[in-house]
Image (cartoon, rainbow over all chains, first blue to last red; front, side, top):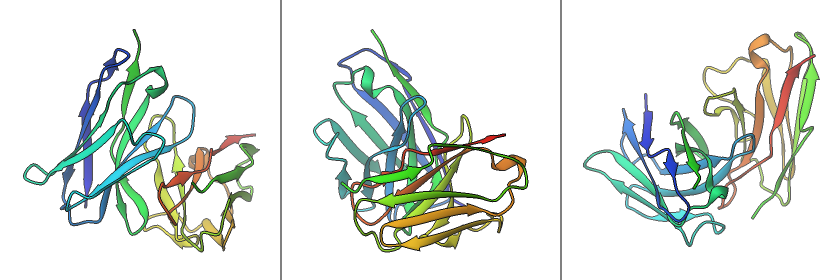
Length: 116
Length: 107
């Protein structure tokens, strides 16, 4: 059974770079796509982007200029970087596997707060 | 981007009630529609995939229907553990998009 565990810095200042990592346990990157999704406090879900086992990425056009998703197959990790953050990027960030067109499972979530 | 419109945004109901939540896509998405349940402080969990298929381990009181642009999630007899927020999500094209959610509260 695939499980995802994520970590990263939870407090950033404006203009800094958000950096999160998600470890995959019990599965391999050949399982289709691996995504990042975020949820501002009290709001809905926004898909950020995805990466597959060969490193091919797709990003949400609304964030594309600031996002990089990468993977490290030797460590079974994939990572998210979002640069030039502002208060609008304050959210809980989730990693998730996109398996047969549905997000399952998800990581536990990481609250990232951007504040001066 | 495909816009997903959910209704209602909130709903009060009692244990044992039958509840229906609707989701409309801004263009046809065939049956590439998933439903998720999210409880406070937790990640969403998939309930229904491909519009009407029940995810393994999900109680049979949950069901989904629809195709094209109009979809519904039905809970046949609400249980206490069902009070949560529900999201629809289209998997037809990138970027993947979600509805704004329906918060199901106890009456």
